[in-house]
Length: 137
Image (cartoon, rainbow, N blue to C red; front, side, top):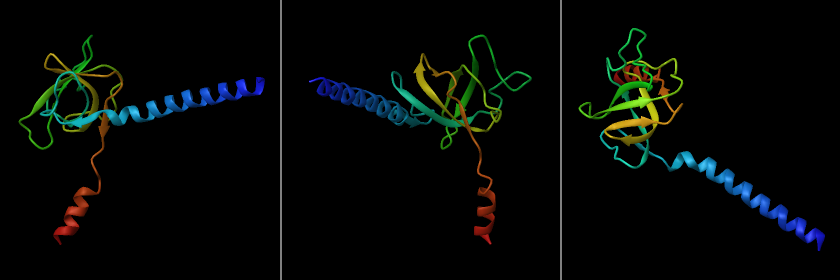
């Protein structure tokens, strides 16, 4: 009887830990990638676009305030679509005008409010220009 109870407890614990692992590993994949023109209220998105020229405004290149960093993201495919972003957390070293970024958050009152420490800058491919030149030869 005692070994059967231990077995049931061990299996239950394994199921709970496995469920937690599955939930945490799949949690990021449940968020939709979207551009500035595709974001709607009441849903979490991974916003993907480029930092608008001149949107971080101070001398260091950042528009930091007590509320956080504010900048504008431009849609990569349609530059007329933009969205303002409010971000709190560490800013990557590569963050600057024109850099492609991904930030996770939700739309609130017309501003995309990002989760703390969710800003990621994407490095431009160093092979894109070389591949285009060799294809044109």
